[in-house]
Image 1 (cartoon, rainbow, N blue to C red):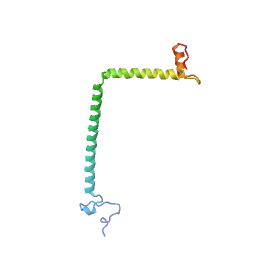
Image 2: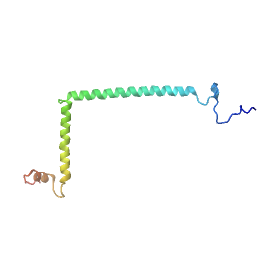
Image 3: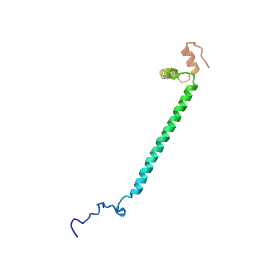
Image 4: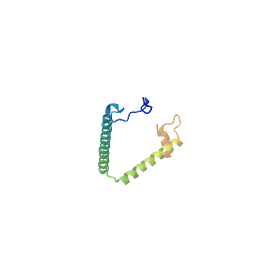
Length: 115
């Protein structure tokens, strides 16, 4: 046996014979093709779903009587009112035994307790 012809068990043969190849290239290529097709289908699905959402948003906006700027201003005003109410409730919590109506009457300055 020649010194150069000895092979280690960890070496992979580099012959073109299919029976000696450690990886089934037919399965590898098929997997790559199916992965590519799946990626294309996923991209197509995302595009169709996105266009459906954009169309629904446009139809909804067209049914409203306000422009987008007016809708934003309205939402901002509602958020400011909610923030003010939350800060007021945080600073002046309801004491035990006091009803919400009594608190409102005293806060309004009317002085008429509500039962």
